[in-house]
Image (cartoon, rainbow, N blue to C red):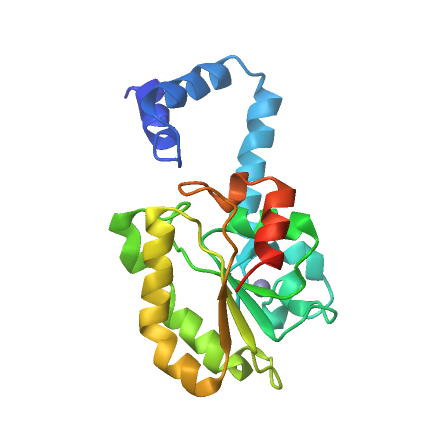
Length: 215
Ligand SMILES: [Zn+2]
């Protein structure tokens, strides 16, 4: 068995990691003391055992945060937070975009993570978009414990990339008729993040003004 090749192959499946970086990881690990390797193995295991995806928004959260509280609701800290504005829903492509928006501290509504893939989605992953799930959350929030929630605004915050725009078109195509009938307003982030850029890498000021200028 070629152990080095085997582990390199596993690392090369990670988003943005090519075969060269993958083998560098392996050579780095070979030189680490056993304790560091054990620590790494434990941390990886905890990702699987301690992290759940929020039932409403698909944001990963630690089940430790709710020890003794009410984990049966299976909602993340954002969705469970009573001070969040539950009339606004921001649709992002991936977890990292949610974190960038949270870091601006200017948005206080709920989120929905659209892509079920490894990162920002690529064309071939178009079937991994959670369009049906989004539809259920917008029109049947009571299925997730938000009894009295009626969204008044859906912010489409996909990235200004070809894929992000395609995703936004797909959402609108699937939901527009129902949204129109429901009087829910659909907004898009203001221009400011350059085409091809991603929310994940935008500086806070740019992201803030893209949010404030949404229409
Ligand atoms: Zn959530």
